[in-house]
Length: 319
Picture 1 (spheres, rainbow, N blue to C red):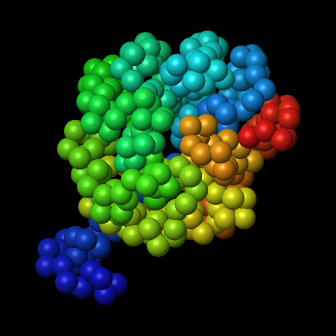
Picture 2 (picture 1 turned 30 degrees about the horizontal axis):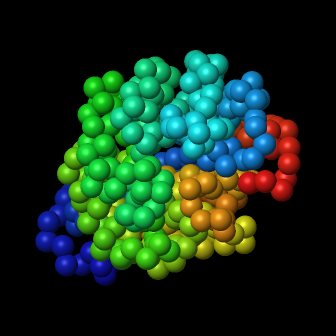
């Protein structure tokens, strides 16, 4: 507890005087776990077309598991990501009446956001924002400066339609494209996002290059510095490299984790050597070992969805 020794401000907590910084720390580590299942991320780069009815059946099973969020589609140019062309039809086909899970769709511009907010079932709009100029142009066709203006517009649109914006801060842990990168750059962008009212920021390990020391440093510094912002982790990793990243984030206070069943998928706009997502089954095993599994998680429903996923992804040689 030495790191809190220098605090002068204190609070009486059940008769025990604690530094305010320590109280903030306990509030952070005691927040409930939120698991975000991302079949959109698994499907978007999959080469074999998946029928809309199959997606709906799969998502319906995932809605029974008890995830906090289901990342279920994107309103983007269908020529860029053909697998997401039926997102509106998929949303319309889902029955969300008996689930605690909230739907999230990715949008890359104002037009996509306008389409997304027309769907009452959608709770979150996810916007991919990169600190890499090269990757932002490659991913969205816009510069960082242009993307900031788009982001502000989407934020206003989301608020006006009772939606929440989730910003995926891509290249959150490194940049292979030659653009400047440092943890200070990430912290600077978080400050800018906070200033325009963003409440959920998911740091994204877009190309699987995150180092555990950077993961630990960023979450340890950002979470207590911005108590009104929910920080998440969207990692990519080789199958045998998921644990150090998840463990580093968890120990640093992160309580929101993205994953996909069997670690399928990744960003199709990144380089060709992109590794997979964090396997949701590994995340669940990790949380069980920490005795911190979400109370509403139905493991039997997860097993059913896991088994059904084999039917969705018929060809195992494609991510």
